[in-house]
Amino acid sequence: MAQSPAGGPPRKTWMVDMPSTATAKTARSGKPIVKTVVKAKPPAIRPARVPVGGPREQAEHDRRERTQGSGHARAGLTPERMRERMVERLAASGIRHPAVLAAMNQVPRHRFVDEGLSSRAYDDTALPIGHAQTISQPYVVGRMTELVLADLPVAPRLARVLEIGTGCGYQAAVLAQVVGEVYSIERIRALHDRARDNLRALRVPNLRLVYGDGLLGLPQAGPFDAMLIAAAGEALPDALLDQLKVGGRALAPLALTRGRGGEQTLCLFVRTGRSSWSTTLLDAVRFVPLKPGIA
Ligand code: SAH
Figure 1 (cartoon, rainbow, N blue to C red):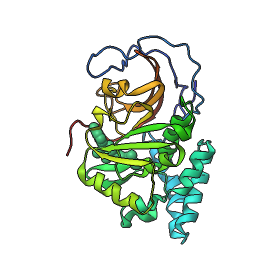
Figure 2 (figure 1 turned 180 degrees about the horizontal axis):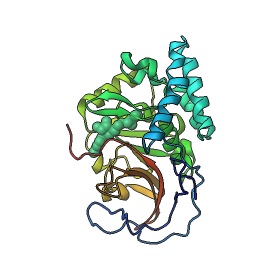
Figure 3 (figure 1 turned 120 degrees about the vertical axis):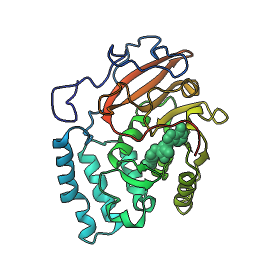
C-alpha cells in the first residue's frame, strides 16, 4: 500500500488480479488479460508523487515550478546546470536508479522543445510539441525508465525495448542510454521527422525510429524484453502482448474506467508464460490518447 499522489487515503499500488470495477481487457478477445493469477512479489517500485489530481495538487505543483523550475532559467543558469538541478529534484521526488538519473543528466531536454519553451525545458512538467501532443514530464520519463529496468529478463545492455509514441524523441533518447536497443514508433509523420531531426545531432546509434501505427507493434524487430507505451488507450492490444518475450514487461497508461474525468492508471504487464500475463496497477498518470492508424 502507498499514499495516493494526493496524499489522501492509502491506495493500492499493486495487485495480481484485476479489480472488479476496472477490468483491463485485451483489445481483440475482450478477455481479461490476467489468465493466471501470479502470486508474485510486488515489483521494487516506490509510490509515485505525480502531480495529478485535484486543484490543490495542481496549485502545489505550479508553486513548486515557479519557485524551483523556471526560476533557474531566469537566474541565468546554463542548460547543464539546469539539467543537474532537474536531476536533483527528480532524485528528491523518488527516482533512485543511478543509470536513469545519469541518463537524464546526459540528454539535453531543451533540444527537444521549441526554442520559445527552452527556458522551461527543465521544469518538471509536460510541454507542447505541436500536433496536440506533449513531451512527457521528466518525472514520468524517469519513473517509466526505472520501471523498465526494474526486472528485465536480460542484462540492460542486452535488452531490446519498444516505445510506442516517439513524440519529439526525448523518452526514446533517455531509454537508449540505459538499454541495448530501442525501437520507437510514431504515428504522426511530422513528429517522426521532428524526432529524427532532434536526435541527429545527439547521435544515438542504438535507437531506431519508425513511422507507423504502434498498435501493431513491430513484429519484424521483436520479441521485446520491454515495451513502454507513451500514450493512453483502453487496453493493451494483443499484438503488443504477443511481441513481449516471456519474462518481458510492458508499461502502459490505461483509461480503465470511462467517464470519470479521464482518469488513467499506469499498468505493468509481465509475460509470465506463453499465454499468461500478470497485471499490476501502479500510479495515476495523465497521457495523450493512443490512436489507431497513421497521420
Ligand atoms: N515519448 C514522448 C511522449 C510522446 S506523447 C516523449 O518523449 O516525451 C505520445 C505520442 O504518442 C504522440 O506523439 C502521439 O502521436 C503518439 N501516438 C499515439 N498513438 C500512437 C500509435 N498508435 N502509434 C504510434 N504513436 C502513437
